[in-house]
Length: 439
Image (cartoon, rainbow, N blue to C red):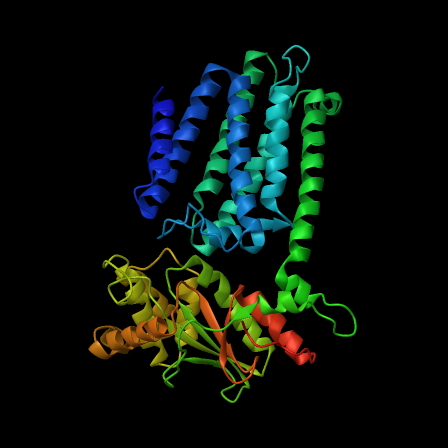
């Protein structure tokens, strides 16, 4: 009953939600309790254990799939530090054959749960089918875990799915032992198993329906509408307008910003970002690729740390590591390697200790003695504070926030749908599409 108690406690704390951060940590307790609960059911009853475990795995996949359809929503598991679902769920490894991996997961685990409902006498090979699928799932889990390790973050929902795969394999071995069977005995006969066909049918149905929805979602996005315009340059003006808006504040540059791209470029992007922000980490390589592929574009970077330790608009002094990361980049910029340091920090969101930052400084080839001295100077702190104040004046509400000048007249406009929208707008302008004034 320990798992049940923890499960209910986690649900209660999450629903009570005494603050977003506390609620986010509560979801971790909830997921851990759910795994414990499933393990207890597996011990008591193999089939029921497979049923609840598959249901938990399907639920985790369904939540992550929903995030794929709404990538700008904040994930409830973006706790901070090493824990962040959004970046992992948007990485290249999160899709396979053009579809979200989580869509395949929903189809498989729903099918497995349905198969677990079958009559034991009529589905004697259920445990063998479950065990063989669990082996494949464990191998794929290892691959996804390795991809997450390279990013430097962990996704609690993903880890829960991996734990479910372990439980499903344990349940398969338990069921095989109870029925006097072995995993690889008569493997060729599983193709006539109703359990296999139930799983396959559910997987195929859910994947096909989900693929249609996903393709429709991709095609109906404002970015897709602008990029996939009709021949002759016809374009949906409403979709175009939704990609940018008039800034709420005043966007100013002072010449101290690190520049990526050709200084004389006709299009200037000003990005406000935070070194603890998962969405900023996702945007960073996309923006660099955009600049490198478009010589008429330059990027100016300003930090907007989401910490009251160096940002007057943020309450409290938590997240001081975000300020230190901003200072680390500033000091790297003194040696002409701002974007090199920025890049390695965005790839390593979970590592922000003083030793971690020093290690990164060495990795990008900085004079670490000069860099360490710079980190201790008031001018470095002031530079970070000046960027934050510029963000406040521009009415930055979150990160990343991107403003661009040279696309729609001579004034800045704020990009509303990320780097992909910015690229679509640049391509439209290059093709001679008139961009209407912002609303």
